[in-house]
Image 1: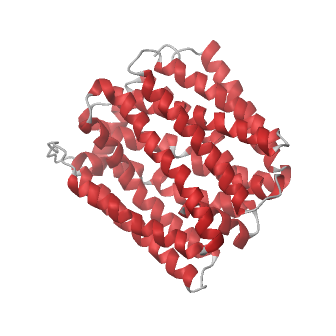
Image 2 (image 1 turned 90 degrees about the vertical axis):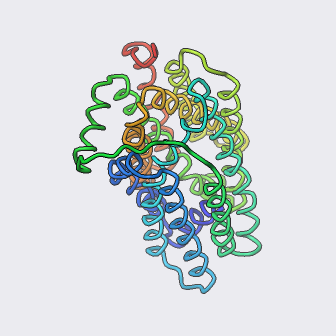
Image 3 (image 1 turned 180 degrees about the vertical axis):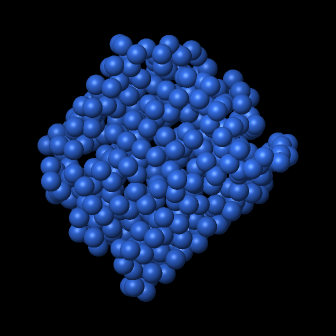
Length: 372
């Protein structure tokens, strides 16, 4: 709900797609820059408590935005600043969250667990925009942010209820040395480095389609917040369908090949959506693009989790976040700067072409990932 209201209002208050890109960049920047520190923290401290602290900070930011909009004193710079603070909290919460998953399920069920996690996440992305669009158009933006703040209470209570057994290693190593150990662990595994590079390309080239959906809704389809809600919902339904397919797939070989086929489908859907003139055709491409994106995410995440050792998991997942989520702010910022000059369809469509060429190279020439 907050993402829908925030994206739409940043576009209206800022008046340019550049501000959408900057908002996304500032929200993801801490995850990119603080990930190594967060990974060390996830390996040294109670991951559940780190995650609870992250939720408290995000809840506070949601309530602050609620008050700013309710009192009609909000400015774009305030939204951008709170996006950065929220991103900082997520930077420490994300590796702790990802490191908890293998402690809750058997190793052989890890891909299904990650896929089921994607289902609940995308169900929220489906329901949230519908409720958010209704709240934004009838009650006002403050309700979107206030309800989001309240929702964190359920998250925090749930985290207090779960029990995770993990012996946190005592070490006299400095934070810097712990970081170096994590980097050495990753560099010693060539396939993991390749996975990180592909993850970066996936989000750098694929995520801008989500960041700039408000631009397509307003400028290409000549719609309003309801049109934006429709596009978000269609993409979320596709993502849920993709997660269900991955969960039903079971523990099989060929995860790398499946991820690459998903990337190829994503590339095709990116270009198809960008250059379609009909909102109906665009929604079809958006639906299957959502399926492809989640398939890539689940397969790549599963491969990284299966390779990582438990005592290195926090650091490994933090570097994975640098690659996977690092592509989001950079891709959004670059695309936000290019769209005013070349137009959203041409920029997003070109991203699809580049992603398709890269994927074909990995499938046909450099086949190491395809063989995993």
